[in-house]
Length: 453
Image 1: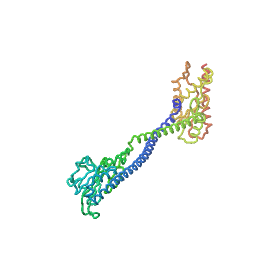
Image 2: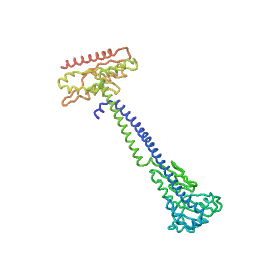
Image 3: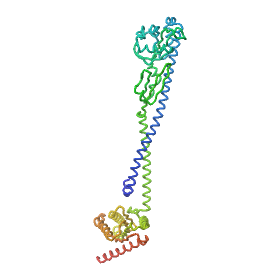
Image 4: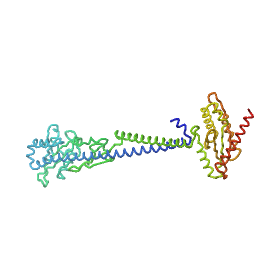
C-alpha cells in the first residue's frame, strides 16, 4: 500500500485526501441520521407495544373492580331488603362474598354510619365502633354515596386498622327505590395495590407509571401528571382514575445496544464503499498511467506530452506562451554498454528525478522514448528566462551526481528549445525546431569531446 501511495502524484494525493475528508463528513452525517431514524422507529414500535400493554392494564383494573363491586352489590341489596336478617347472619353472608372476590380485604356494615359488623374480625378489631362522622376523610365518601344514591368508589384512604385501600361505599335505604330513608352504609375495602400489581402494571419495561384519582396521585411519580408521553382514563362506577406513562426507551440498554449495532453496521458499509471507491480510483489512475505515463521513470510519456502541447497550441493565445525543451542524453549507449542495462535504467530514473526537481510543479517533464526527454514550461518568452532555466537544470545535476556503488556520473545532456508565443505554427514544426536546436548542441558537445580527447 505504501509503495502504491509513493507512486501517486501530489495532485492525486490531494484529490484522494479531499475525497476522504468529504466522504468522512458525509459518512458521519449518514451514520447519525440512519441510526437516529432506525432507533426512532424502534422506540416508536416499543412505545406502541407499551401503550397496548397499558390498555390491557387499564382493562384489567376496570374488570377486577367491576367484578368485586358487582359481588358486593348483591350484599348491599340484601341489606336493603332485610337489614335485621343481614345483621343476624352477617358472618355467613360476608364469608360467601369474600370467597368469590379476588381483592376484597374486609367488609363493614355501618347502621347510621357507625361500624357494628366487620368481616373478617381478625385484624380489623379497631374498625368496630368507628363513627364515620368523626373521620372527615372517610365521612366525605360516605356522604357522596348517600347523596348520589349509588355505589361510590373512593381514592386510596388511610384505614383505621392500618394501611391504605380503596373503599366501595354502598348507601342503604329502607324505602328503595325512593332512597329517602337512609339506614346506613356497607363498606367494601379493596386491596388496590395487589389489584394494580396483578393487572400487570409492573410488567411494562422502561416506563414510569402513575395513577391518579380526583384527590391526587396515589401510585407512582406525581410529576408524570404534568410530564407524560401517554395517559388513559380508567373508568370506575363513580368517577375514575387516570393512568399516566412516561417512556424512557431511548436510554434503555437494549435500545442503546441496538443503536450501536446500527452505527457499527452503517460504518462498516461506509468503509466498504470508501475502500471500493478508492480502489476503483487508484485502478483508474494506474490504468491511465499505463497509457499516458512511462513505466520506468513514472513520467508522462510521449502520448501525454504531445496531447498537452497540442492543447496549448490550440489556444492560440499570445498571453499563454510556453517553452519546449528537448533534452537528449549524451553517451547514454556508452553507459549501457559499460555498466549494463540495470545501471542504465537507474540512470534514466536519476535524470527524470532531477529534471522534475529543477522545474516547477506546474511544469511538465515527459520521457519521449529511449534517452530523450521533453520539458514544457509555461509563461516563458524571453532569452533571459531560458538561460535561467538552463542554469537551474545544470546546477541541479552538478550538485547531485549519479551514484551507484563505485560509479559516479554527472548528468550530461544536450538541450534544444523552442518558444511558442501564439504564432501560427504546428506541433510538428514546434518540436522540429526544438529538435534542430538540440542536435546543434549535441554536435557542439561531440566536437568539444573530440577536441578534449
